[in-house]
Amino acid sequence: MMMRAMPLGLLLLLLLCGTESSAQSLLWRIDVPGVERPSWIFGTMHARCAQDVLLPDAVQSALREADRLVLEIDLDDPALPATLGKLAFVPADSTLEKLLPASAYDSLAHFLKDSLTVSIATFKSMRPMFLIGLFIGRALECTPVSYEDRLMSIAKLIGKDVVGIETVEEQFAAFSTIPLHAQADMVMAMLRNMSAQREELRKLDAAYAAADLDAVLALIRDSDVEYGRYDGPLLNERNARWIPRILEHARGGSVLLAVGAGHLPGEHGVLQLLRAQGCTVTPVP
Image (cartoon, rainbow, N blue to C red):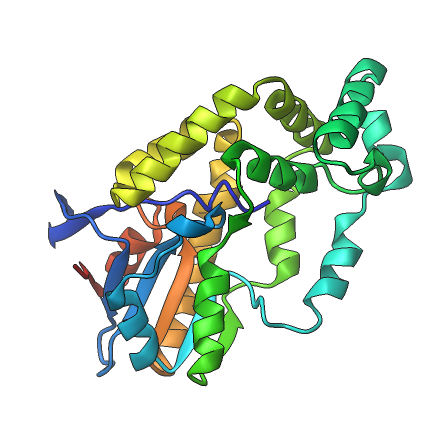
């Protein structure tokens, strides 16, 4: 469900105030005024084939130097499954069967049964966005793995705390700005155009592999799969809300932040917003 903001890439290095110059990297060093130790931010991809989820040495070094790992949400929270369970379901008058025309519902049911060997009954009372996440794996033609899981595993091995920059409730509130009927329409669009979605994800993956944040952001904004029409609440508004929290974390000790790469670039991206707060933000080769 986080895939929209999860596509990644890289932005441009600000050499002079208000001027951007092309510098590509997924890892950026953050120097906060008055704070002796630096922090870092790494642009992730929330769903990628396992063989492609590689953590550069510089990222692993930053994690070792940092006091803690900061993710979008605390994936290590033992209460997370219960919280997700409470938030996943829709009102009785908004079930998947009621959100879709009968023919579309039947097509979806057959696809789930025949191609994914799951019953539509599992999802009929859940937010359609959960099916979008399931279809992402289908489009990738592999079992998706996240950078967050890899980072969290390393953090545990070396004794680093894992915390979240926002709550699960806040993230769900952002995604809930997409009306349920629109989520259902996205599900059917993916089902009917799986080959096109597969090509779109390949382009996104290539942009991320090239650390091309501008290309990542452009693909996000143009993509139906990536919820481009909702980049205001899903990207820009969350970015703005994160900035004081990022600064609080950085002032309380060195941290490695790992967030979807789509949050980094652009006028309203985290990198530019941090610079606006007087931080020095530089790419790490």
